[in-house]
Image (cartoon, rainbow, N blue to C red; front, top):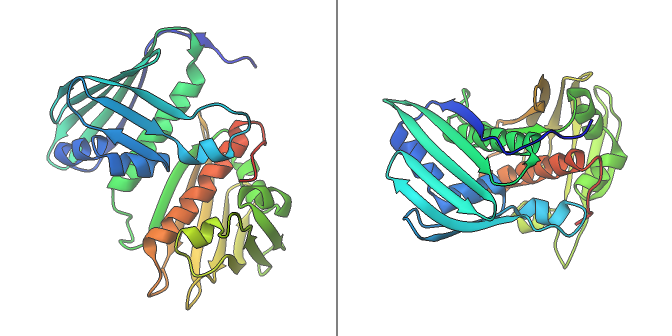
Amino acid sequence: MPKRLSSEPIVESLAVAVSPARAWEALTSPGFLGDIMMGHVELDPRPGRPFVWKWGVWAAAAPGKQSYEWRGTVLDVVPGAMLILSGGSTTAVLTVKGEGASSLITVVHVHSSPAPREDYQYGWADFLLRVKTLLEPHPSGDALYLRTLMRATPAEVLRAWLSPAVMHKILPGKVTLKAKAGGRFEWLWKHQKGASFASRSGLRDARNSGAFLEITKGHRVAFTWEGGPRPSEVRLSAERTPYGAFVSLEHLRLPPGSSRRAIERMWAHLLERLRVYFYFGKKIRAS
């Protein structure tokens, strides 16, 4: 079905269980936004200042030669409440409202020329979901918790994760696995320019393995993770939403002495490459 073109504003909102001050701090932090985009952000939230948002994984993994960055100027700021960014044909108004430990973050996106509404709705909905996920603590306290939206059905997401051929492209690297409870898997990350992504992220080595604990068709897969001094557990699940699949990944009981930051970046990298893979009709650059 052709994508619907429209120049009407797009509005996306999401409630976040943090104070408005904390939400505002996150939305104006280059480091926090860089984590959201897995790339690089330059932002000085003062009127007239330039900004740059770069999506790193998309630039490396998406087919074609499109530039995955947004440059422009901060048009206006109401400290603690509103940030207006404008670049190219796009203007985005980010607002924060709330009190106590509750905030509502809203994005109003205006495109001056007709553009695929679904793309922007999908992009901003995923942006807000990531903001919420990074700001709110996981119920278990110490688990790694990532969430994202993918242009796929839940069944397609789980089939891809259990397919050696697909995961070979997503890592990229050599993958062997037996997709059944008790079956084992092994990922051997491809080395490029002297180091794999796993190595560059600070992980112990470029080889990871484990065993499947549970596979619920089209919904969830749980497996052990042996990338540390003792096995831990990872759960990947997918639910249907109007945007496609709502995908969540939990890494429980991280091994002592492991780099939480490195493991979090590894999972975020894999989920983002999987997101690129589905967005472009199961096409991805092996980089």
